Length: 419
Ligand SMILES: Cc1cc2nc3c(=O)[nH]c(=O)nc-3n(C[C@H](O)[C@H](O)[C@H](O)COP(=O)(O)OP(=O)(O)OC[C@H]3O[C@@H](n4cnc5c(N)ncnc54)[C@H](O)[C@@H]3O)c2cc1C
Image: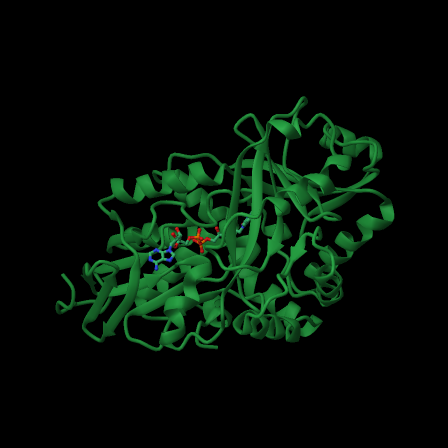
């Protein structure tokens, strides 16, 4: 079907590389527009960051990473191996070039721009999930407030200030400060160490692995193909694309979208996408708890996110700048446990399962990369950092519009991969 004469000018077949939330959402919304899709992944569905994340569909907390205070925090963390932010002190010129670029974006001007760029993705986040679940994706999203717990009312002021800044930059986040007793009601697992809270309303959470698999099932039920193939290169011409995979396999289509998360730069740097994507690796595990978990729990002082998960609690945290395929570092997980233990009670830490590490796709300016590359018929979608699960479906919907109409939606102008 590739390269055929098209009456409407839009592609009829698209290859999507990467079967995470971003790639599969793009495939699904392309199908909505009548496009045949083939999804290729080197390992299978939800093999990257989209599996063990915290599962928050939390547009209200999609606060860009590049706050000025992160700089001070990052420098301190360099000398503390147990800090939630971990930067290995080793010779890696590409990593240090990335971090320098990231540091240059840690000012309020760049942060505000990132908030504004992410605004349409956040505003459409929950609705895009509703479109999926109302049209064949057999998974649920759970409405719930996210409750942040703090060791003092003073510590809570940091998040309250951030939320105020979000509002000033254009994103209103419904929230309320709560006192100790109310915090106990919202989070029965709260230990005596937590004395103040902030409730962020109108958010949702999902079991991310189950959701992404349901999305993949819906893509195949609608006639799409999902294949295992590690893509090594793409030839793109005005008449179509040829996708090359390890082992000599090739795939042809009218267009291709590369949505390979933290691995994006390996392919896309060749296509004029100069903004690098690096892996900010996070760890998670599941623990049984003695007590109710009505909704997600946020512990900003130790940078940990907890979510009700399959009758237990998923605990997620840490930002570690190592290669996406480097091995699991048990010390990172132990640091999460050591910092979180004093803040929660009734958690059976020793009985943990599902220990996992996954690479958040982080850009230096807090803005994702969504849109056309320098090559014809070749697009990228990725770099959503901490918030790709929440923003994946909205990203897929907007990019499918761009690919099929040939017009860049206004919402994607500031996400331009060629910036
Ligand atoms: C601990 C942790 C907690 C998080 N919590 C949240 C949260 O609560 N809410 C939220 O919104 N976000 C959260 N995130 C971030 C979120 O998980 C990511 O932003 C999102 O999953 C990125 O999705 P993706 O589809 O871009 O990438 P991925 O899910 O990583 O998918 C990329 C896919 O590309 C494939 N691939 C790579 N290279 C190739 C190749 N050459 N050929 C073929 N296939 C290839 C990989 O196998 C992988 O399946 C969290 C992340 C972590 C690590």
